[in-house]
Image (cartoon, rainbow, N blue to C red; front, side, top):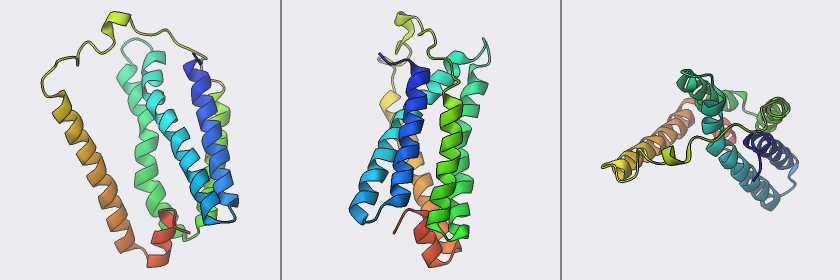
Length: 171
């Protein structure tokens, strides 16, 4: 088992390297492969960062730590996508992302290597057999998909067509 703090640092580093490889890609195949690797690393990172932030928080501050950790994802969509579209340069935005990921990767190495796990009996207990869990998850996924689609749609309407395509990773 890899300590969670180390796993966050390693996934951020892989995300950085894959993004840099995408920046240097000479053809579409290399670009797509590097973006797929970056997506896998980002998925791993976001799947553990919330729980890790909650666990390292002092008693009674878990929600605040979780909100702070997840704010980055919201900020990237709300500011990053329109910002890249306004820049109109895919290479500048990818270089900026590489710089940001370098800082995150370096900071992640200072995280605690591991934190105590919650008591075994508490894991999954509130949701097992609880009515409406599947419906709740379906509604959350639908809202997330609608939010992403709306962001993509309105950004393309507000920005000149070439720059909008660059914002969403088109070559």
